[in-house]
Length: 282
Ligand code: FES
Image (tube, rainbow, N blue to C red):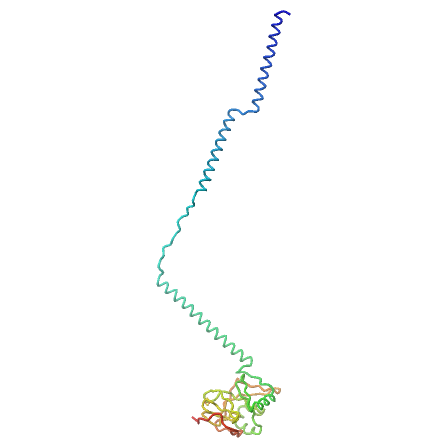
């Protein structure tokens, strides 16, 4: 092999090696370009990072400010005190007093109405002022006798005593015009109002004299309520009675006036010492 051939081979070899180097460098540049960012991209990334850091610093700064901030409240509104109007105050007091007066009057009227209704209701149910069932007539007479000649019925405000049958003829003359009273006498009883016809005291019985003798001024009445002494203007007032199916009923709704002074249908005189001294007629 001559030197020319050798030089040619050497040049060809160098050419091949140079071409391989160029291809390799180009390939590296391609590979390097795929995994790296361009300059503009890096610049944008740096700007974005800077903006993010600034935002973070701003947020932290605002948080610190809000943590350190002291709430400042607006000053409270204070109304200026104004003295009340004396005239308006007087009007208010008057209105209050008027309302209180009306309320008290209403309450009083209400109480009175309730009491009145209760009173009337009681009368309707059989209290004083209505017909009162005293029980069997035989039992009533038995109680009179066991009571020493007198039976007091508080619900009728009455004394019940016996009327002697032998005096019925005289009774008819005096009491015949008081039908319900005479009916009771025929049945053997009288119902005498406890109220003294003089001045209204309650007249008690006197067991020793067997009369009624008023302690207030000394009026005296025999056992059937005919006046025997004292200032009373008449005998004891009385109630009509009826006997229904053997039951004695006293009608306290009607008061019959007592017999005139001097009436003495039974002829009963004091059967013992008097309980009070008669003060004399006046
Ligand atoms: S009230 Fe009975 S005698 Fe005067």
